[in-house]
Length: 115
View 1 (tube, one colour):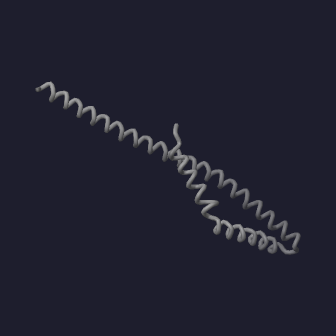
View 2 (cartoon, helix red, strand yellow; view 1 turned 90 degrees about the vertical axis):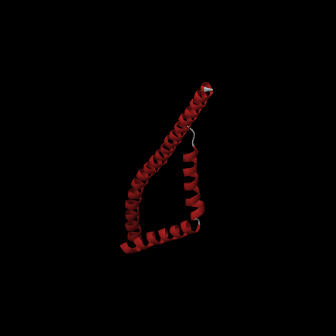
View 3 (tube, helix red, strand yellow; view 1 turned 135 degrees about the vertical axis):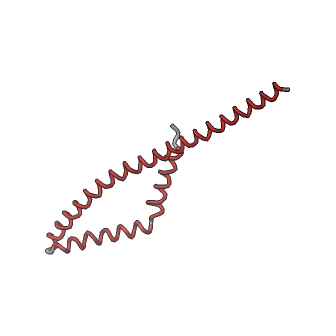
């Protein structure tokens, strides 16, 4: 009888250890996935910041150039800002297809990626 009790206690002990190990593994996998997503987003943000700086300076130069062609500097700035107004309206209209869906897909692929 005592042998059965010790066997059941050993079984419960092993089940408890297995459960703790499984929970710890799930935590570590979640941390790994979160770190992967955050690092990917930060690297993309860094590249985006550099690109935005380039685009800003290129747009200022383009505005001055168009303004020189049109006779007044501010005409060039109006032309470039009108272009960006049109782009922003198009982005707003197609925001789900152009922004929301690709970002969602990126996050899902990163979260479900197998190592």
